[in-house]
Amino acid sequence: MNYRRLGKSNLQVSEVSFGCMALNPKIKDQSNLLFKAIDSGINYFDTADFYDKGINESIIGKSLGSRRNEVILATKVGNVWDKNGKTWHWNPSKRYILSAVEHSLRRLKTDFIDLYQLHGGTIEDPIDETIDAFETLVESGKIRHYGLSSIRPNVIRAYAEKSNITSVMVQYSLLDRRSEGQILPLLQSQDIGVQARGVLAKGLLKGKPPCSYLNRSEENINLLQKKILKKNIPYAATGFVLANEAIKTAVIGLRTEPQLLDFIPEVSSPLKEIDLKWLRDCFLKNHYLSHL
Image (cartoon, rainbow, N blue to C red; front, side):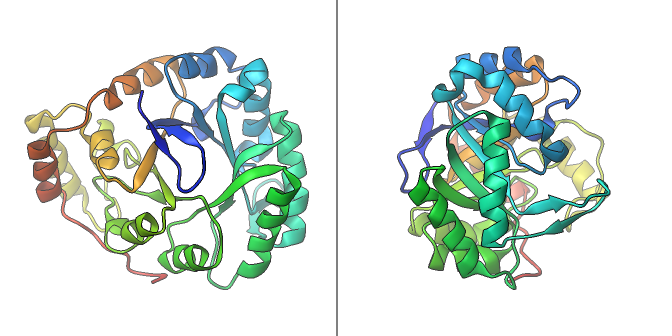
């Protein structure tokens, strides 16, 4: 496994990281799977207080146990479940963030969070207040670094300009190259690490039946799937993402040991330049249409 420095921090994250959202909430002890990931070289685990109403964090806290200090632990804040348990609302206020972190720390069974991320965001948010909340948590030692998880260019630019964010999590894949235009170059120029999510495009790049995706029709997806299958480029989806220097880790949702073992070889060697060129030419760029 290779490792890359996340932004200006001292966090060295594995190129493939463990997206914990996919964990089965009915299995409370996932230590075997998480330990297998650690032994395979994965050291970055991403969750959120929103996933399964906090159950996801609790599973990770219980499962990591004595190996907590071997990993970089990231979680997110901002989406709040309503009392009915069916709907939620957005709250990026300082008061809420300072309260929510205590619950995450308790569920994760840890004294600190390595990376605390805002789980979304709009340009109408009280951004300065939100930043102040994260800075307060850094000063208190409850979090080591903070970041942003967003697909909105105007929000990403605002935080890149105003804050000391370590990283931004964006949606990026062969089928979603929107961030290549301005966002990835901007973040790279400011040494803000980028985490890529949606690398497999809801499984469309891993063999799921074709369907429309962003501005691409079902017919187009079907054609692209056939082309890439015929070309037979091993680990094309992950390799393409990690070939971009701005990307520090590909966050993959993992649920089972076979899935884990399937992804470990994907970072053993980079794609050949000729294969990268073919992929770039075949999977044409798309662009943001809103929140510019």
